[in-house]
Each structure stands twice: as C-alpha cells, then as structure tokens.
Image (cartoon, rainbow, N blue to C red):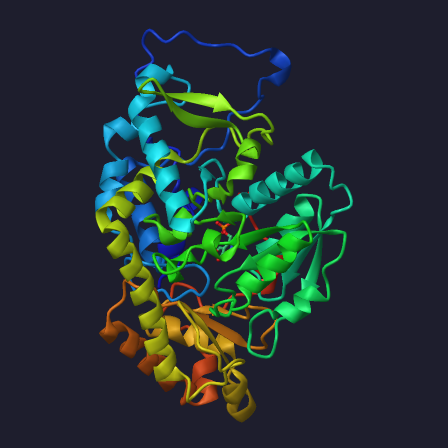
Length: 481
Ligand SMILES: Cc1ncc(COP(=O)(O)O)c(C=O)c1O
C-alpha cells in the first residue's frame, strides 16, 4: 500500500479548495462575548467533496468487518445482521422524531419500546425491562444500582460484597466497584465452571449477591447456577446474570427460571444490531417483580388505550437522558418478530452447533484448558505451537489477517495463558468454518520465521500495540508545529 493511501484528512487538505457552499443570505450573525471568542480561525481541513468521499471510502475499505469476512472475535458475537431491520430503523417514522415531542405524537414509538420490553422480559423469564442503558457494561452498572437500592430500601446495610467468579466477563468486577460494592472472586472449578460448594464457603452476612456470566467466558454453561442461586437467596442476597451471551440460550433456558433476579442483555450482540464500531449499542436490564419499583427513569405504561410515562416509587433515577437508543430498539423488535420464538431458538441452536463443529476441527491440534463441552464459543491456546516452534497466539492472529480472516480474540480470558477465543456465530456456513480451520492449521504448521512476518497484506504491518495503548497519538501535528 502506498503512503498516500493512508494519509489523514489534513494531509490532503488544500486551502484553495472548499467542500461546501453555504448560502448565508438572510442568516443573522451571532456574536459571542469577546472573552470567549477565538482569536484565530480553526485549522479545518479544506477538501473537495469528491476527495472527502474517496478519502473515507478508502479508509473504510482498509478495515476488515463482518461484511468483508469471517469475524470470529470471541465474546463479541460479530455476526451478520440482516439488513431488513436496518431498513426499518431508517424509516422516517423512526428517525424524524424527538424524545421531547409531546407524547401524543410519539405513541407509535412508545408502542415499539413497550412491546420490545415485554418480549425481552418473556425471553429471559423476568417481569420488567428497562431499555435505558446504552451498552452491556452500562446495563451491568444499572442492574447493580438497582440491587444496591433494593438492599438500602430493605435495611440490608451490611451487605456490601458481590461474589464474582474468575469466569465472568471482565466488565463484571469493574461494574461492582462502580456501583459501590466489593467484588470478591470465587475460582472456577477444574471443569471451567463455578462449583456450588466453592460459593457456599464464601457466603456470609455481607453477601449482597452473586454476578454470574452465563455461558461464561470459556463458553461453558454454569451448571451449578440453580443451586448457587438458591444458596444466595437463602442468605438474603440477589442473583445477577450477565446475559450478554444469551445468543447461546435463546428459547432453550430462561435465566429467570434458573433463579436470576437481574439480567442484562446486549441487543448489539444478540438482537439484530452489529457489535463494535463504537456503537450505538443497547444493554436492557430485566428484573424480577419486586425490583420493578427501582427501575431507572420513567416506565412506559398503557392507560385508557394510550401510552404514558410513569415514574416508579423507588427509581434509581435516569441512567441517561432518554429512554434508550431507539434505532437499536426498532432493529431488535424487527429481528425478534421476524424470527419468532422458533427462529430465536434456532439462532441459539446453530450458534452452538457452529462453535462445536469448529472446535471439533481444531481441538486435536491445539491445547484446550478444559475438556468440558462448550456452547457458542470456545477457547484454545498457543501452548503446543509456542513450545514446539515459538509461534504465539498473536503470531497466529496476525497470520490470519494475511489469509483474509479477522482474528479471534487473543489473550482473553486472562486466566488462560495464550488464549485464543473463537466465536463463529450462527450466520456462518459450514464451508466458511472449514476454510478458517484450514487456514489456522496451515499457520500452525508453518515455519515460525514466515508466521512472524505477518501481516504483510494489510495497510499496516505489526504495530506497537502497547505503545498505541499507553501513548496514543490522538492529535494531528501540523508540519509547522
Ligand atoms: C459477557 C459480556 N458481558 C458484558 C459485555 C460488555 O458489553 P458492552 O461492550 O456492550 O459494554 C460483553 C461484551 O461483549 C460481554 O461479552
């Protein structure tokens, strides 16, 4: 790739150019107070419209996305999302409205949100849902603030600890801390799931609850979930389930039936909106009936045939300005109605079948931390390749890019050395899974010197990833300083 193909927009700027024509006739100038007025004009790039279009198209083409190739990024559910739901979300009825309009104008939008809440509640086997949280981790925080408010309201002031297993998603302990709890770790057992007896020994008067990611970060179903939920309830605590991996369970089991009191979902993983790209996402939270009064913001209720908003007695307050990301909600509702309950169940069945098939193609050749059966994703490691040839998980990830595949997640979960976490999703064909397995096996069998040169067919080669994280260059420096 030539240098000019990855210039930043300032480098193609030409002060003689203009990208827009503004007719300022009839527009009254607005003057700011002199002390806040800037002294120099901003150094904005000046690029003709056609060049701007080409510039950003070129940048987009340098990227690797679900629409280009297989994207088995474990834990992220990078599946193909059907375009019909996007088309519905782009409809003027969905885009040309504002949450501050009178409610009489917004009855259709409120109906969409109301139905989606009900369908999600039914899906997870709980009673009420808020669509307000903007993403999964935000949903976790919201759910835990609800838990905290419930404990406060009932005078359980000693309960400050949440048990979080080492199999939980990384955001879980962080959310506990942000909500004012102390996260205490329980180690998973030798089969990769949390054992009830290990949780039992940790429960005491200070236990506010447990937070279980299910299926967990190894893609393994938490088999003792029901027993654990019972024990936590007996001790006066509540059970939080991180339901971001619900794509493995849809229509098969419901968290509420297993004893979960609070569950967050990631609509941008499971329900028709792509994950990644900086959003927007949506992390609805579902709760059991006695927690409904604590839900954030206003609730949508139907009264005398009209949708109205009602504040609940013990609401934790708003967790963001408006009821939720509306376009994501439209996509989720469209996706659920189009698939129906049988279709949603089929999503989970195929997601698990695809992951198991791919695992079967790879497991003889890679070390796996657990032999336990997995659901929608699985973790292999670089142990054999590293010991034999010095080929690491990172080397294999980079070499996959040269073969046209987006790499799986590497070095996560952090409890597994050299982890390679693979989530194929339900939208991939048998042929794609086989082609990916062939590519990975070919890389593992290659000479290390070759593999370590990768990637060679991408716009940039190996990057200093630590440097990029520690010293990010987020500003353009003009040549003259
Ligand atoms: C199991 C699990 N929990 C929580 C999250 C966090 O979700 P978000 O990235 O939307 O904040 C993710 C993200 O993929 C996840 O996989």
